[in-house]
Image (cartoon, rainbow, N blue to C red; front, side, top):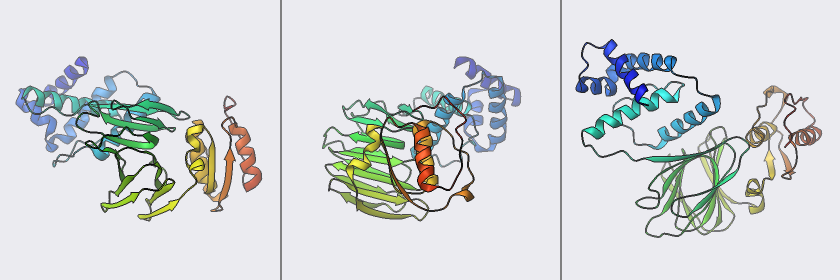
Length: 321
């Protein structure tokens, strides 16, 4: 990191007539220098070692998630381009300057990212546990459980919360905020899905719709809050808990879903990418249930037999489960 810092400073001094700390800080944070900073950071990236696609994807997912929830300054931020490393460097430099001038330290966050095809269990510092579904990012402060129990979610996770009435447990996603004192619930908030779903397993939770700050109380096991992102509408219904928690057991349950929606879930579950023509499928809805050990090839064969509307080929023969 020190090498990167020196490179950025060198890039600044090569583009500026003055290299004092005050001027460097002004260059770093003032929006009027956006073009110069973008050019400097882009050149820094060109000089840096390559980053693997998986690491870049995780870094970008983290950056996008944080940008949804972290307090934003009133000044316009530096344009975020496709590489997270250079942006993170710019933020760290600004934080370093502020720290040396004895401003309050920014909160430090821990991150957990489960890749495609993975479902893992994580214990939080307060003793609560969560189980992540595929392609899920969790961000929380390192002092989680001391002064706050707020975390940020992109993806899907099940939460088993340790009771602490003095410190509510809060899960924030882009469209919802869920608060619990001691309970179990699931939040599904994938960027590519039309719906955000919050399902109560046990206990009692409060769900806030962040676009209009409307609160909904769920206190019956199996109640599910659904927000449609396209239509901006909300609904609460009773669902089958066995179906709603199937992903935690490695099972796949599709109820009233179109083929494109099913393929989206399969992409996350099996860490694959489907290429197809949307005009070749329609809005017909189907019900399917697949056990944990069912292979992707078998799933596609069954869907094709039932839907009967498309041809397909699996080009990666290493996919077996």
